[in-house]
Image 1 (cartoon, rainbow, N blue to C red):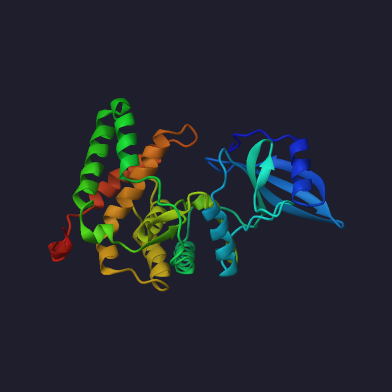
Image 2: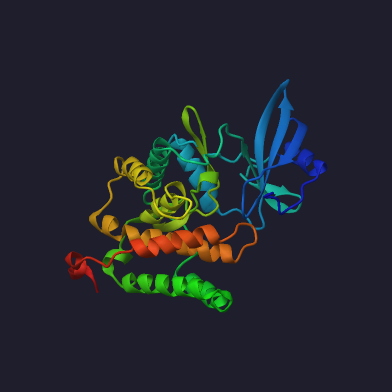
Length: 314
């Protein structure tokens, strides 16, 4: 159960008052979320009930997250825009924790994504990247220094296969770190965490993309790689070609990939798998084995760099 901050009924009633929702009806914890506590809250006003999602965090919500949601909503993308608190801000405090409140969207998280669902995720990411082009924000925190620190922290506790996996992944990334084409991949704001449990679908298609708490500046290709690893992988971690083509074609029809992005794709999917594997080694909330299997496959798929690009290297 994804609840790390307790919420009493009195707290939920206070939320209804703080966001001018009307009368409190019910509250229940959700099963989603790794880093935040999420609750389904029902209120009633003028005889009509409405459902909301109340999110409590250990840290203040970044302005980039809130501004991005407002911008994407204005661009017509299905995202949960936080309601304004009675103070006028888009966040408040409940049970002593920073809190957001947004409408609850219909739909469910796909367990076995279809090709058209992968294409819809690709289109969403392309539209997001285009809508936020030129918008500033913090750099992605899981950079090379973060990877090095986590690797040093966990290496003594890893078994022989895991240590070999970590060493191989770091060697691949070191081989591209100083390349001009790698450092100059198109960048911008990324969702950074578009896993299946952060998207809702119904029979009409994509209903919503949620959880923008990892929004930061990074290579746009990273967003696509994170999605591919989760939406397009078999249980053993190997990428499914049909779903992957659906995802990339959905994206590229709106924002065509550059030559360098196409070539460096295997390295970016490896980077995405490595970051999440290391993050899950730090967490008790989601086991790291799935990402570990995925990383093993990405290492097999990370081909040597093309001589045709050697003239762009530094």
